[in-house]
Image (cartoon, rainbow, N blue to C red; front, side, top):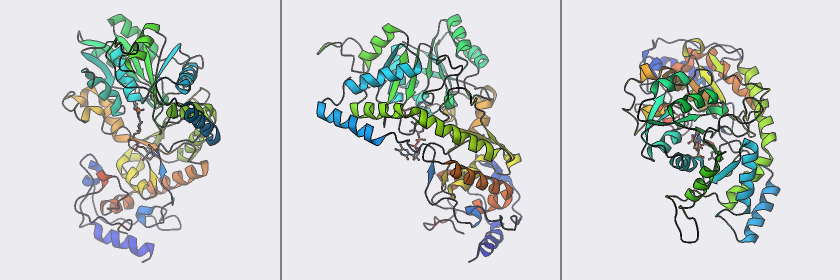
Length: 461
Ligand code: T4K
């Protein structure tokens, strides 16, 4: 069947088929379903959902790991194996801590097995109790770390430009039960940490930051502003500098550092003396070996990401309704997340439709961080008036789309991604209709409806 015939088939089917996308994709369900022809011409079918070949044979991911110098890593692994010392504060781990502290510009660093454990340990180490102010627009680990310590997250709204905590909202949310503020340097953007410090000091609160995205980011080039009492980096495989799995708590407080060191090792203060409540939060030597090798390649990764960012900036610039998050290209930054916002009216498709259509191109864009922590269990019900208290969060969770980058993605890939995005926008009406009858297994689960047969051979086109 030719592409023309396939599209005609969709268009003739479409008026009898309802939307199969979920309730949050309201635009899909509310549109008029009268047949509309896509743009006809040489560029008409430049979209897999309309019958073109997928733009990519391989899948392009957000979070494909950056691989550092393999020989250097294997040398380190051989050292680890020869030493017979595989964990518990070995030489690789100690060196990793020194390098992270140097990079962050802090006095101390305690490495952990992942950032989630790092957050939990730091929260407990700081002695927060009762309520802690936190954004809802973050990865769920930030909030789980509080809840698992028996704390109540009080969700605060974020700044529409940086997606970091809005300081006025923070101040307004403080009550007698509040003991701390947990800011998130989302996407490597810095929270307004000086203002937050002032607020924290005024109310006698602890201040810490989830800096999972922020390795190598400095807002003024003079030092990482935004450590607070403690900050936690992630070195998960999907982070631009990784240790397979890993995290690191940085602080300038020597008493806290000593406590954290006990806490990541079950609280042991000696061979059989336990001085504090603790857990097993240690980083292994193999992870530290990868972390060290990855840190050595950090500048190369950042440069690559920066080139990718510029390519996206050029490629998306002319497309209506898609806004790329602005970065200060003259400041140290890891550029590890390509963050866009989709204005459905101007673009022609909702963010969810665009993510779904890109899946068929084998571009696995992500809708981080949908639907917002306040809409996930066990936090549903904590913010019954989210529409009023979290208006920016509510908009961002419906509009933000993160696109693939990292060393697995080239600037040529990005030009091709942008061309497809442009084609999807130009043919938005036809794309919208095609998606309502498509149940390709590559579609995200929210875009596959119960009424359409699942095809294993690609789309129903
Ligand atoms: N705070 C914030 C603000 C965070 O964003 C995170 C983690 C944390 C705290 C907690 O840090 P950790 O405890 O993880 O150190 C991913 C990551 O798992 C998570 O670390 C990250 N944030 C989050 C933003 O993204 P998923 O579930 O969305 O990603 P996942 O596992 O689907 O991976 C994304 C894609 O990357 C995959 O579809 C394929 C590709 N991939 C992934 C891995 C692991 C590979 O190609 N190879 C791989 O090894 O959470």
